[in-house]
Image (tube, rainbow, N blue to C red; front, side, top):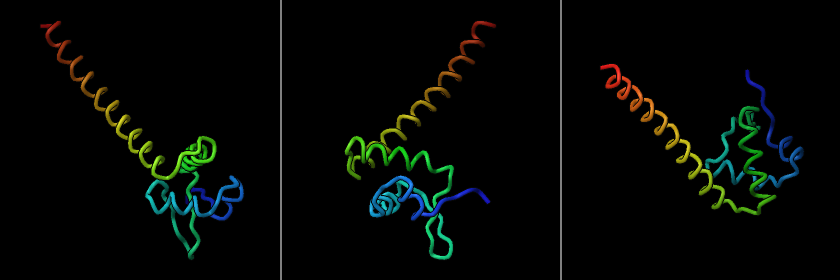
Length: 100
C-alpha cells in the first residue's frame, strides 16, 4: 500500500486550519482516501496540498481563486501537451516531404 498521512497529522505538520483542508476536499481540489472514518492524503498528493497551502496562506488566495488557478493550470498543461503532439505530427509530415 502506498504511504499516506492522516488529515489530523497533516494539519498539525503544516499548521493549517482543518476547515481549509476540508474545503480543498469538498471542492475537489484534493483527493483523499477514507478508512475506518479516518481521512488520508496519499504522499504522492502532498505536493498538490503544499501548493494550495502556500497559495492560500502566503499569497492570501481564497478558495474560489485556488479553483480558478488550478483549472487554468490544467488547461495550460493540456494545451502544452496538445501543442507537443501537433508539433510532432507536423515534424513527421515535414520529414516526409523533405525525403520525398
